[in-house]
Length: 152
Image (cartoon, rainbow, N blue to C red; front, side, top):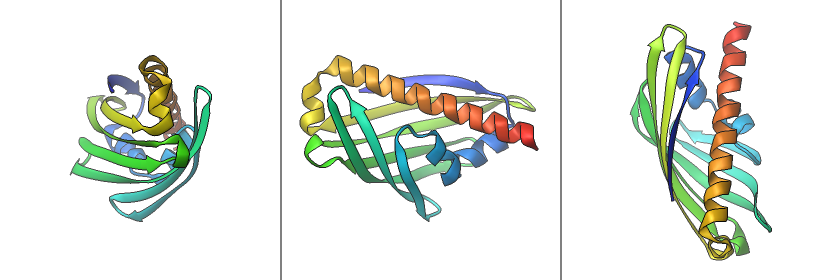
């Protein structure tokens, strides 16, 4: 499955970049995130509870940042296991472009794969859930960055 979209965020590119690398910001924005801990500047472990149709599962996994080009772009990859529900793995390339001193365009290109019981639910349900989760994350992320920027 592949998705791509972009979002305009009312904050400087540097502030958006800092938030993309802040586990506390990411944790509050990832739907269902129970924990997100940084084990190195480029590695994190996470626990996320997700519901896809009738299947609810807790995924434990790791996230790695690579191809870092601060404050312009990076690649984020992750994989997790949800026990009997299956597994998910994938990645996203995130690119930031300044559109002014306090406006940043965040563009993402996601590729993901799932297996196990989740894969049996059907492509349309999986695709719509993935798009909904991505939209929830990036909306929450944009709001968190704008709120932090406004507080300064």
